[in-house]
Amino acid sequence: MDFKNYTIEEENVGKRLDLFVSENEVDMSRSFVQGIIEKQQVKVNGQIKKSNYKLRIGDQVQVELAEPVELQVEAENIPLDIIYEDSDVIVINKPQDMVVHPAPGNYTGTLVNGLLHHCKDLSGINGVIRPGIVHRIDKDTSGILVVAKNDKSHNSLAMQLKDHSMKRTYYAIVEGIVKEEEGTVRTNIGRHPVERIKMAVVKDGKEAITNYKVLERFKSNTLVECRLETGRTHQIRVHMAHLHHPLIGDQVYGYKKQKFKLRGQALHAKNLGFIHPTTGEYMEFDSQLPEYFQDILDKLRKEV
Image (cartoon, rainbow, N blue to C red):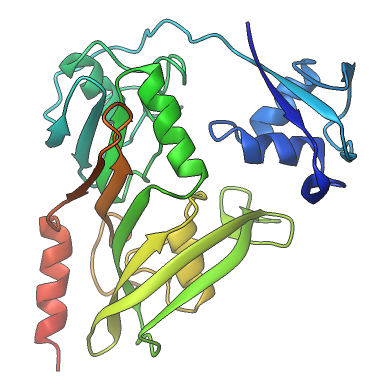
């Protein structure tokens, strides 16, 4: 069994144990951390503590890491748009309406099912359900993501996500006219206090930073480029709604009445850059806008 050890320094004094662990273990949600704390897989100074334990200077936190689990998800012959592949990573252009990994209600037809048919050597760090998956994009979001073929690559890419050195740029079409040419949204994002299936800007959430830039303005909509510094769930959707410019097609954070009949929000992961886990070379990839996205832009450009 592997363990991660942390020594608490001044900036984390007073922070809840579950919050600290979830912030430092990139693949663990806060609810997951609370579960392993209950299972006594997290210790402070060799002792079992509750999730709400407030950390003190010099505390020694030990996290028990689960062993990689043998992959058991069914492989499926699903066409994949592979932009780049070598022995360490695969860069995929995911279509809209495809789920990244199996989950309740979506155990087949996912990107992972297709990847397992394409190659057998995926990182096992995330276990049975998410082999190789370092970061995700929503089912209704199209675009680029990178998948790890081995544990070394997974750890390297996960660290780049954690220290914000991985470049991730999205194109989004939003409601209304964004007046500023560019800006930064810096808030905390967490579960909505009432509607638990939603995320929201909340005081006790995790820090979320989105940089945005206007690319094109239309009659009543705006095309914006969003560059993520953090990767919180639904971050761009929540942040643009927070600015009162929700994404078109977003029935969760946007308007119920939509002028375009979309399957989901107009959001595309356009660009991805990272340092290759083995060569140390910086690599950057770009994807074409999908047909549904380009069709909306064409219609907006014709509006007068």
